[in-house]
Length: 230
Image 1 (tube, rainbow, N blue to C red):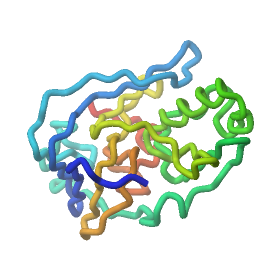
Image 2 (image 1 turned 90 degrees about the vertical axis):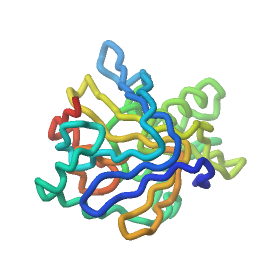
Image 3 (image 1 turned 180 degrees about the vertical axis):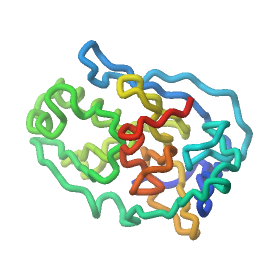
Image 4 (image 1 turned 135 degrees about the horizontal axis):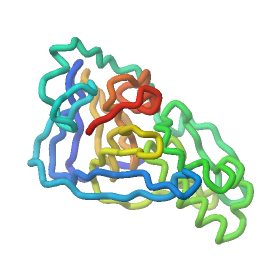
């Protein structure tokens, strides 16, 4: 849904780490919640520059997280990719509203839970005829890190996405007492171990706990196993 124009690429190695090339900002990103524990906003803190080529852990066992230290080879990590390579729009289910449509590919869910506020986005889309409701709805959907959820503008026949710079975030989820996936933002190319490129999108989350059944993408397993990166 977005062309790769930033020169940043993530190459998946066979049963090994993610190799990142190109200048890109790294950050720790924390899910901040309200008093009821509902995901409300992202709180970020930039990391020091790591150079133009870094290897990020995807087995979940490196002692130098988020970076790879070779542990994947010692534990016999199986990083076999199982995710669909079909474009997002060919897989998405649509929930229609007056001016906007909510697109949803459930298999990409990273369990960040921004979709749950205000009665859940699947119900909210029916109320998007009013400007105020639409703005809140769009913001809520765009906070979904995995790109599972996308707002489609029916008049423009286009997805509504923030024009974010290329960056890589390492998600922390205190409310669930776990560390989340690697968040790629800004149209970063992801290339399979076999050399085939996945669709380049504005938002995707990559598994870093090693347990996803939708590799290389996150499927929320980190929350079930209480994965900790720190």
